[in-house]
Image 1 (cartoon, rainbow, N blue to C red):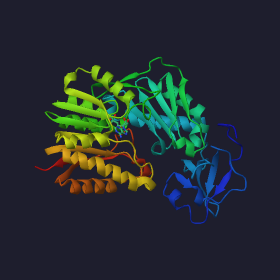
Image 2 (spheres, protein in one colour; image 1 turned 90 degrees about the horizontal axis):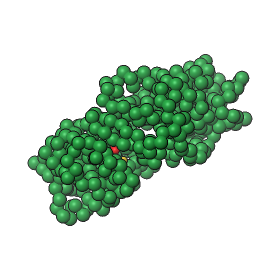
Image 3 (cartoon, rainbow, N blue to C red; image 1 turned 180 degrees about the vertical axis):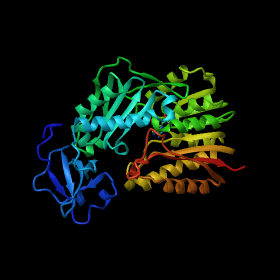
Image 4 (cartoon, rainbow, N blue to C red; image 1 turned 90 degrees about the vertical axis):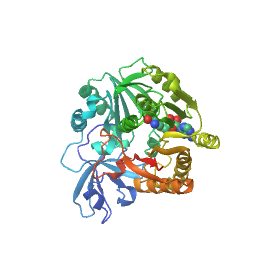
Amino acid sequence: MSAAVIPAVIPVVRLKSGREKSLKRRHPWVFSGAIDPPRQEPGTGDTVELRSADGAPLALAAWSPASQIRARVWSFDHRVKIGAEFFRSRIASALAMREAMPVARNTNAMRLVHGESDGLPGLIVDRYADVLVAQFLSAGAESWRAAILDALAELTGCTAIFERSDAEVRQLEGLAPRTGFVRGASDAGRVAIHEHGLQFRVDVAAGQKTGFFLDQRENRQRVRALAAGRDVLDGFCYTGGFALAALAGGANSVVALDSSAPALEIARENLCANPFDASRVHFEIADVFAHLRKLRDRAARFDMIVLDPPKFAPTAAQAENAARAYKDINLLALKLLAPGGLLATFSCSGGVSAEFFQKVVAGAAIDAGVDARVIERFGAGPDHPVALNFPEGEYLKGLLIVRAW
Ligand code: SAH
């Protein structure tokens, strides 16, 4: 069916007997195995009414025939109308929640819509100053794209919207990648933002994810508060978020590593955009796995290490392989840490739970022969809420570890 046309009759899809439990707990996903295959397949992204095997209406959802997640719930109230006004109202509510957050006073860059946790499965919207970056990651979000873009433009007042629908998960939904300005056009290859008084440049077109790791904002602030007088190593530094935060906090020196040349180029621009003594920072293109070994062989020592690697395990199936990678870098980092030194170590893998991550880091400490304690735990910032009925939304976890004297 063509996008965003509301049919007179909404197709009904029944679940298999006994498979309505997660919907009743308001979990927004229905997997293909729970569905009684409909005689007539609804169109991609179409709104369907989900019913239990005995015919009780449960929710309105977007149909996604290519994905194992066959339906994603728009509303648990089956009487609402899923149309432009519905999306406008959900977006307005997501924006109102952000405006009320204290963090809104400390930055002009924020996640405005966080998918399922804002009641909008498959939709991510980040704001960088006056530019919005939107990702349509599910068949349902894709089919309401025009209405969503209109509502975003109207409600935020942003005239430029860049689409970054190039995340790999789109393949699972049978959707081709799409990127480019979809509203307005900013000639700026880089958008200038500020975060807790620090200036950053964001490459919305070619940067990773939507251009910046907004989820780490408050954790960068924590590192800043703890960095004074320390020799810091920022592994996986991207455009220098933690490195600059450490400098702002009075770090003695910072070594920042990343394997991406374009990321390091922006990191250097970011350094220039802030009033820091550039001689205290050394950005280096390097594979962190190999470079940590080199530093170990040189018996290097740091008072603070940040490890914020990419997603090693998008799903639980890759957790064991990911565990090996996490253990490797954490083991090496713990060995490089001076007594009393701090390790801020993160995992953004959806497939690795906080509990499992802590076990892996504990194993790394044993093998490193290091006595270490957890003194704080990290998560994503408040603009990345986790709906209580959607624990999958909690992907970022981190530990602040101190090496005992
Ligand atoms: N801490 C950053 C975000 C890190 S994202 C911030 O606050 O902005 C993860 C980074 O790891 C990416 O920049 C990616 O280029 C880099 N990366 C991935 N694999 C790597 C490897 N093996 N060695 C070094 N960097 C790597």
